[in-house]
Length: 58
Ligand SMILES: [Zn+2]
Image (cartoon, rainbow, N blue to C red):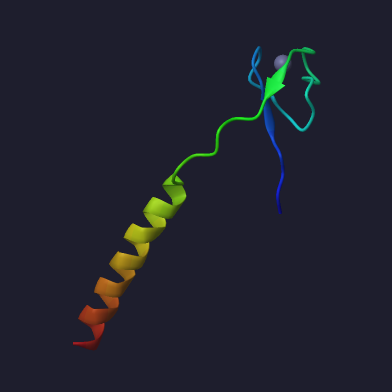
């Protein structure tokens, strides 16, 4: 799913259009983050899960 989500520069509302539905201001597409915080936590979670599994099989 590829949603081109834009954000209003005036009221920070999210919109799929170039114009804000709330205040009529201009919206712009934010730059995609280099990494997702969720992915980072997912890495920790996987590592923790692996540690727990190794401990359990020992
Ligand atoms: Zn707005």
